[in-house]
Length: 211
Image (cartoon, rainbow, N blue to C red; front, side, top):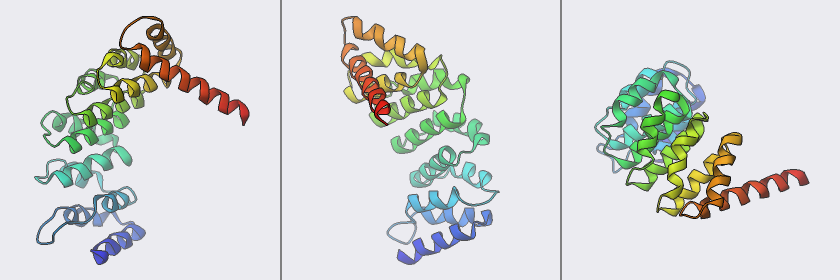
């Protein structure tokens, strides 16, 4: 395994996109107990020269979840805007939660306003990892209309999700802050996450003032 990792890092230093396909193949476990660690493969694929987009998009349909997860991570990390149609096509059919979360988060990096409805639906996904990825994606898109998608999540019974949605609203400008203040004043399940996010914002502002 040390040799496998060293070889992948050597390819990263060379940076030739022609090595993209062998790196993707090395992630899928075959005769070895395990394949190339995905984080090493992501490092390589995000560093290679073009062309890698075609190889990465092709990997989104690989039978191994580890390879599909790799592809989704690279699409969002590099990022590859041209892969948006592929992500939209496969996101509804993906059954592996970890890969689905990576696809959802990637869509936040390469998608746009047309994806808000889809991301809002995934923000209510029963798997919390997927739901959190959708909140991050809505924040990353950063449009004023993201506020309407995030606001209902403030009442979600999952504390991590409601708090993450509240923090996301702090990053969406005056409209997001106004929504938080409204929640903080009204009785209901959204009071606590809204108060938390507003206090966090105040602490950050105070810290910046000390710089």
